[in-house]
Length: 345
Image 1 (cartoon, rainbow, N blue to C red):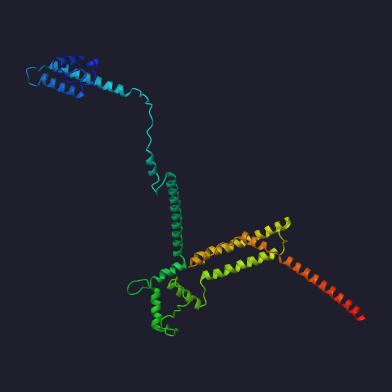
Image 2: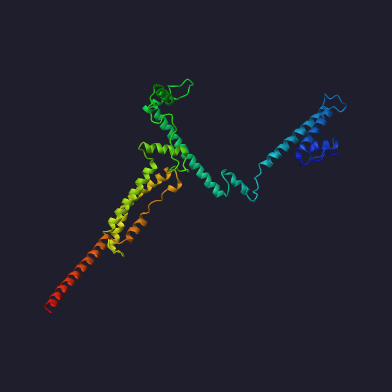
């Protein structure tokens, strides 16, 4: 049976095609592998050294020449096919599936815009952390060369028998051995605790620390800040009231309103200072209920402006006193005249 192939045969292999059609029954459009097997079979038949009865050098030379020409023609045909211009295929370009976009920002969950925002925020936070770490390392490197850093290094030279850096503990034990703590009041006795005044919601350690500070004349910072804030708010209110006395009654005239606005603007910087202290106080205060709100200058000014000025009240009182005095004078004059007439009668 002839072998079926898919490659067309050129004119250079007519002789070999005819020979194989007649002898090996191979089709002209056979594949390269079938062509090679047919050539090997024919070479074994006609090779002079094969020792067969069909050995013939002339036929072997013809078969070899034809096989080489066919191979050369097929290789050239393949090269020509590869050099042909490519025909443009009008097709939709391949795009990545929509769900692949979520792999761009592998942070959090949600839509692409939310993930992109989270990714930007995380990059900004990493940048801030890197800058902070760099500054801390720079400060630590500078501190090693200062006197404080050298003192810390020398302090580490004093070690206990266990090899621990316990300079403070060593100094305390040394002082106790010398008897420097024996004359302290209340030595060996438990600390007195006043359960009536203690806040049950405050930690015991915090309570004792505050108690020790108060007994030694110290005040916690948040208490001192609270006192300063209340005093400054009271002073601000008094200054606004004094400035209110220089303005007329409501409704204000154009000049009075302009002057009042200027007065309020002058107190704005002081209000900012008070609000900054309030922020610091809110961070330090241990109880949430003790936190304060910011001072709103507009509300405070509106409250002060709603009260009549003291100057107008004084004028009103002075007018009333003058009218009463005139009435009394008139009453006394009429009393004298009536007394005279009654006496004559």
